Length: 405
Image 1: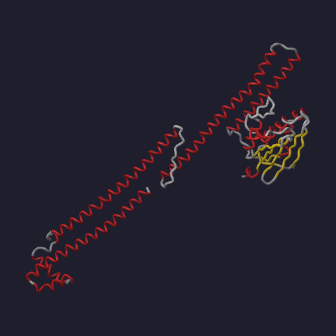
Image 2: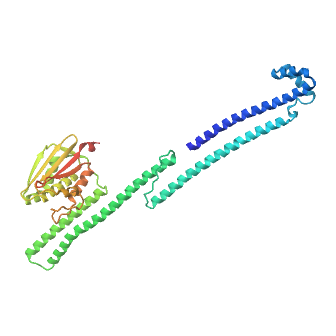
């Protein structure tokens, strides 16, 4: 519309210039007509009265009102004083035709120019609209390879750029959705595999029990079945928690969490595996240290991390848990005295269903993945490092500024 308005203003300026030039041309023709009429009068009079030549030239050069009044009276005697009855001379007809053609030509020329400008403008606009329509059709068919960005000015250019932004967003969402579908398929396959093993064991143990074994074997089989059921219960519970985290159905509380109390509760829940392997646990940190987060879910994080360390620490080994607090974050470090993590495994340690080379056969590989998901949900961070032969060290950071903001 700005282009069309600019064209109209240029056309208006052109019309004003053309009108000015037409007025100049009309003035020139009028002067020529008057001069020719005066020349005819002077020629006719001086032909019979040569002595009146000077008076005639003086009357033409210097208008005398008395002479003009006397001349009008003479014209009135012959009925030429009425403007409607004035004689139509060839010069006056020529001047009229010139002015009429000019006044008619100007609007016709203006209309033609404006119509042409509007035509080309609308054709360009509709061409862009058709291009946008084709682009939208390709997007609806899943083709995101087309380019529609436009760096020119105008509302349609802005619309194109906004559509391109939406297209880029849709493309990323489609790629993310495809990745999630792939991950879901892989996850279902892993879950099926993880459930298949304990279910197969339960089926075999059930068949053995159906044969009425001796009391000692019966007790052994029942204990094995109980262990497999607990494993299935833990696996299903963990998968449900992961699903809730993935779906965004978990709302993390923002409460003051004392680190000492959190570790006491976590270690109490892991007392049995710690006792079985006779592990020594050392705690070091300020008992008054706190962070802002969710007490229960943070406990889930520490449980999974410490449990992983217990599984990879030999009997009579050591676990060291320390924590520090500064104006930026509260950090909790958990290190073990195991063999450490192979360097090539470090990038994958928090990947869902990933099991390292030293992992036990019954391990699933979702504990650390769930720990990272919970920490990220609270705006924190979890990392791992190790020195081969000296064990692994996990660092969990809960940032103060992020929660306060």
